[in-house]
Every structure is written in C-alpha cells, then in structure tokens.
Image (spheres, rainbow, N blue to C red):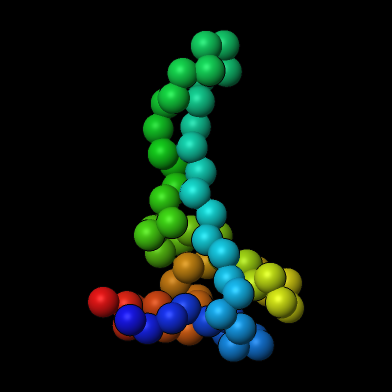
Length: 64
C-alpha cells in the first residue's frame, strides 16, 4: 500500500480531518459533513505544519 506523504517535506506524519454535524438544540447527529476518504478533506503535516487537502498529498490516487 502506498503511504501518503506531505508534498513539502515528504513526511508520513500527515493527518486527515473528519467533520460531523450535530443539531444545536438537541445534539442529535445530523450528518457526516466530511469523511477522511473525501478528496477535499483537510490535511496537515505534523512535521512542517503544511496544510492542504487530501488530494494534495503525495501518493493520493495511488492507494489500493
């Protein structure tokens, strides 16, 4: 499996965000607004602090 890497420093220490939405008054779950597999999921490198999107990471599209 190809590992995702930061496009700036080539670190494998990268994160993807998962967003959920809840109803303000009842705190009931409404939807998953963003999932980690989405190409526009926000991404960050923990080593150099680069920020971008999942699709910007080196190795995106090569994962099996």
